[in-house]
Length: 640
Image (cartoon, rainbow, N blue to C red; front, top):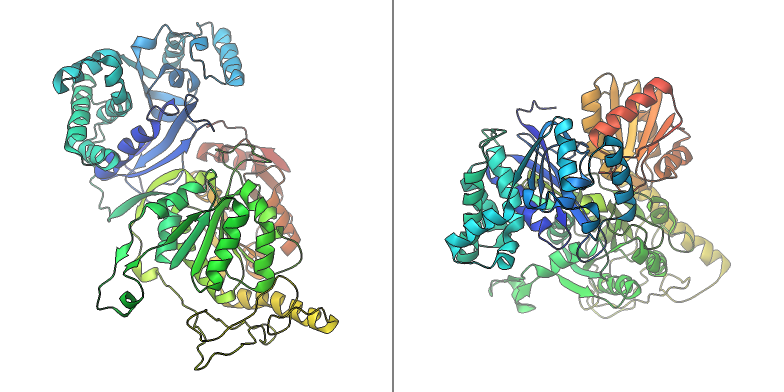
């Protein structure tokens, strides 16, 4: 791992709907403008406004992708944030709070979770402090944390004098900018970087920028430089700040996806809405394509439900477009029949599944990896599919392109597994490597005269013909029933057996053609005694934890679950004397797939299922415990 000069953890929190996300974006973009790599993860309640939400993140002069459970600086929009995170700031850290709220009791924050309030009330009473913001400040100071209280009202009045607004309620809209500006001043981030953050996050409207920069000026006049970060002198390449939703959306566009269907559901909808908001591209009139259309973009359809969404995507793929639908667990449930149709009719569609807490509505804004088995087995009957899980935002971008290629080539449903942790994680990542982006188009069969084509007459282990209406000068039959080579319904016993074998033999072709490095990746020495195995968004926390632990350990990242890379996984784990599996679900689903496909039984499973992802220090402690004690099952309880 590269040596870090700067490695600092941060948190900004406040009531949902009061500018927490805007504040975090100003913070992240300002830090990025100062030349640092940054990471931020959004945690929020599933309500429109009022409940406590926060961003937790990290700043470094090398790429960062994970967090710890203690931060060095906490920036609060309201007093509830100060109370809720009283145990989340490391000794030597700084909490910035509004001293106008010092006397407020827990009960005055009416959107407090009952269970959270009860736990904190008990803690405060055991510590002998009052259940107020002042009591929380006392606990911070006892723990070696510097608490800096400033009057937000007083500072806002100063801002009002400069921008000609006297009404304190109107000035209240600047509280989110004020809270992070105070934090950035304490970090020593240059003020010109903050201007870039304000412009990028709030738009380059001169009046808005000028007003918010006066907020910044007042903050920098109020708070001294505590951490002295300054501007980064790291030789950082050009980078982009994306979250998982945005990375997948851009990946789909660059991968040639031209049709996206969805029904609004958290956290999948943001991906589709991002695509929907992108302007289409005007074509040069001299181009051949301009004879057909004058603008090139992505058709994005908000369907009436997920059944319609998945079937619309099938229709678009049949018509020749690269197509995708995006959803989360409850919506994926409704897509089961449509996915089965794709399996029978041999239609290639990318189904992007953003996992969240379940069952039922469950934890709709929290993370989970509990839909793995669901992705592997959804739909009735047996049919080939590809199931791929991405490990971080950068990987998700490139995987969105690859899955589009695979859906078109193999004409099977391709389920791209991601989760809410990735959806809500923002990170500064290198600009895409355009040389690594490949749209691998599958040739379309073209005939000189209209003809009925036996699309399904292909050799065992082969692929059906690619026919596109209006281009191929051919027509085909498609049905959800068993059919002959022309797509005509037929239930002959020998035909049924042959067709089933043809479809499922695709898995062997897929397994041969897709390189092993796309299916499983090994980090560290493959001859290590200890192997930590995981999948999905746990990847980066595991890598950082192993870096801190040191020693003879490796990380095996499972990426493809169907078809499962049995031989390369067995080879990767051949010399490991101890196998530890880490994942965000109760039943250790990935570990059970590993056992089923390879016969390898993990010595320890480390699971977490409270809707929060693993933090680095949590994994350091739990992996160390697994190696020392040999416990078979360890549960993580971290609350951040």
